Image 1 (tube, rainbow, N blue to C red):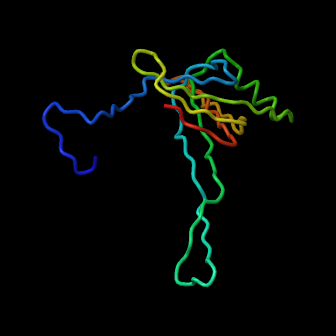
Image 2 (cartoon, one colour; image 1 turned 135 degrees about the horizontal axis):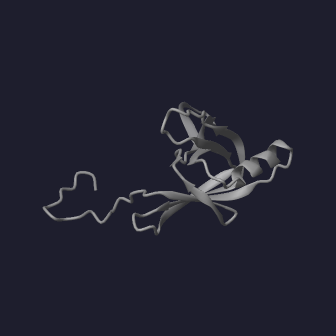
Length: 152
């Protein structure tokens, strides 16, 4: 589509999906709605090597795939599922779970999801409390996972 010019009223056939909230499922059970989520980021290591007697070029190939941790932020609620899971991990019960981050359209229907596999909570932070401020305190949960996929 680069360089393509559209006439008045013509469309590219590609609609941008707006995010109007998102839910998080843990092992298929909704754990709540969240305020923010960091980016889903994955990278393939680039390995360089020489090939036979060809010393004039560097050859490149794919190496290990890595996935960056994701941070979820939510307002304080009485749902302690994430805190309870974190306490299990701290106590030595390294229970890994599948997590889905589900984005919603403005009508509340599912727009897409990010699935994280072999996930566990590697950090938990509760914001400072300020009695004179009207700000909402929030929990920030760091999710580490082995691999992930995008759907939608």
